[in-house]
Image (cartoon, rainbow, N blue to C red; front, side):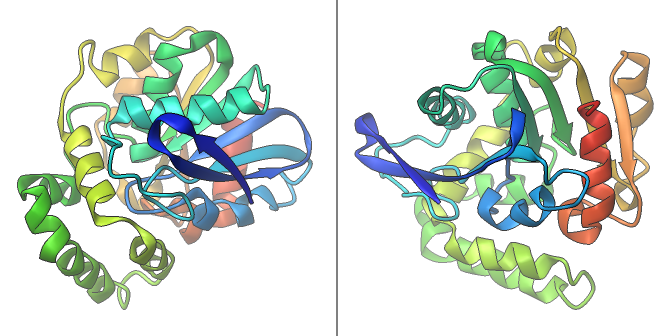
Length: 260
């Protein structure tokens, strides 16, 4: 794992840089998770193992620091990822974002469009966040969530493991997450943007795709996005945690979405 010092935050952001053929594929994780937890096994799937992968952990998640003077907004997360890509001298990046990571990917692409060659999202909220988890977190004050809300949220996820075993990976990452990072990031997800994330995504010119897990359907965005010319792919035998539910199916969808 590599570290990059972010001077304005006096903190390290950490990431994997797995060697392979270019273009580099950058994978961004969802709220409470970490790319270091979600994606190393995906990068080693036979269909993808020849490629270079960059797997950042956002500030406050995974192995990255959780600076107090960072606002954890989508745009601020995007700028730290940009600093990683700039430090690696990357161009023509193939960018993927899962859930919250997709919202960060939109912000990054909108700000630095020449850096991103292709953009793929998976079950990202294109509108002000409709995720019940994010709304529940954001509805609390930061102090209340840090004091007790995070522990309650973790317990609620642990109770679901018996019905959804793949959540055990999420629980492990969630235990590493900084509660203030969770709260501030959830607040960022519930806020709208101007233009909206949906408008930004649809207006972008590079090849784009959107991935759903089969168990997350029906979703009206499947047909809507297709009608807008977006390549929509479905991962079989998988829900929101598609990279854990069906790693091989997710790797295949990623390969097809990037047209590799």
